[in-house]
Length: 156
Image 1 (tube, one colour):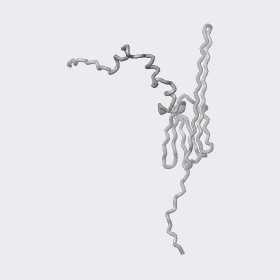
Image 2 (cartoon, rainbow, N blue to C red):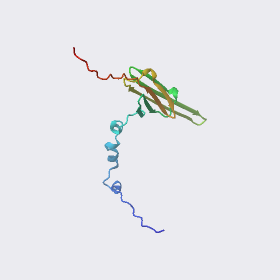
Image 3 (cartoon, rainbow, N blue to C red):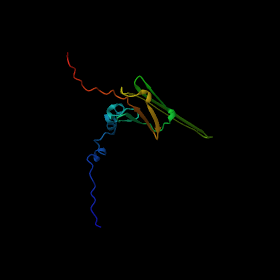
């Protein structure tokens, strides 16, 4: 085994932070750190809405919605006016009282999503299940009317 000399990598702006030219207040007032920017679509996310995957097969659609921490009773799922509406709400509170202190913990989680269903979905056959933090839907497609082959019409 041989020893190899270790050369420390230089970081391009590492000395700037410790220099007198670096203004710490200006750095944190920078637009990148602005909370309004972080709450917009700049981050390409939908704030407060769980992610979902949609897959299409020949005879049905599958939708998986990530909603960890909820239980089946926390969901309210309806099909109405061509929309699949998913609402969930969960509250938690705990209080511990001792002689010298009182500890209270609480949390509240909620979301709501509405998905426009394609016209070829059988709304009366939508099925849902919740397992390991994933709310899954199976939407059966209607059988499409087969197109007739063109027929030549003779003119009399």
